[in-house]
Length: 129
Image (tube, rainbow, N blue to C red):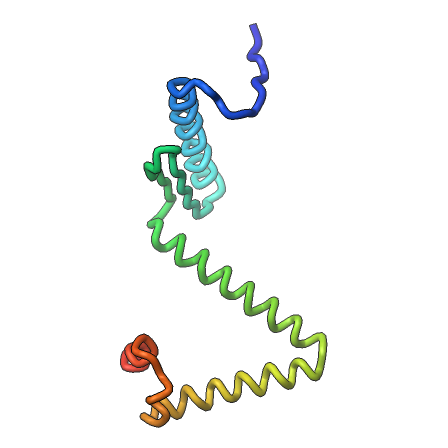
């Protein structure tokens, strides 16, 4: 007897839906663990049930994985902006000019000048620096 292929659509029966969710979640977590072990990959998996309950799996600390993801996304955005700017020399000059103004302002703020332009969060960040 072979398994039948089921149509992928929402399961109407609440009990059957919860059982399916539980089984498939366990299978997904098992596959993530296997991938992590076999390929030495860092994996972070977050699943929310329909009731809002959180389930997670991570091959190392979840906070480290999320932080690494955020750094990667930020770097990709910066890379995209830089590559777009390099395509047009006028844009490159404008971008570099803005960056120079920003760094000059930051340096003067580090020296204690032009602090009245800053909000509370910026002042706290400056104090930590």
